[in-house]
Image (tube, rainbow, N blue to C red):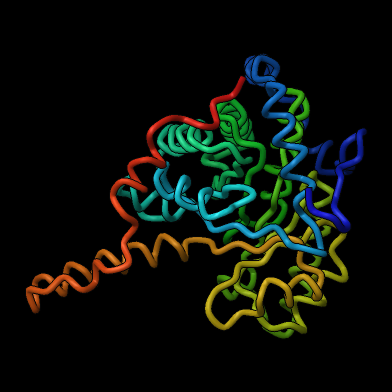
Length: 314
């Protein structure tokens, strides 16, 4: 267990405020599905562990996986938890990123990953894989059944109020299922360059406050690497701040000092893996050589990582 400040959701749950009133109750059928999906003792323990990993002293670091093999490789490298990348999952299944993947395909991948690793798993579910709140409730029910203990839900180009509604439904669904699900709300103002740059920080903080009030545990702001903005975000956001890192970004330790509690690589690892495949192929086709294969994981090691499931829930 890491030492340092960590974030714990109050026993009574978050405040929903006006968002809760607007959403209302889930249909009876969806409620029954949620109540039928209870976290096992092992899953509850993983949920508590995952929540405790969000610290300022040593931010949670997530090298995002997209299939069982990548998840096992990342876990074997010392990962305290596994996060999926929706882009990587979609690409591996022949779809583009951006809510194009069929929900059942995403849930099947999540289930396979949770069954293969021993550490907690949090799933990137894009906008919730659905057109409305009832669809989001179904996705959350499926995520819990798959064994995950957290999700990322993004706003993208949707109105902020729509994501707030989806977050409120996700929180209600998880609570009714008795699940301590970590809801990470992704704000895409910086990643997509939304709005006026002069007021982007103000808009991002406004969304963050709305999303926390709707039930989000953490706030994810990808696309930000400058220290001044990161520090301003961390100062005014009550829950754990998650940023996406890559070449040129501050180190994990530096991000921790700025107030960041979680650092993700997003689709970066998947992109690097596909770049390695392209380099090897081009070298083979262009020069007939094989030097790009140097440094590959030895066959017995990789095969051994997949010899038996490690994370099946009890």
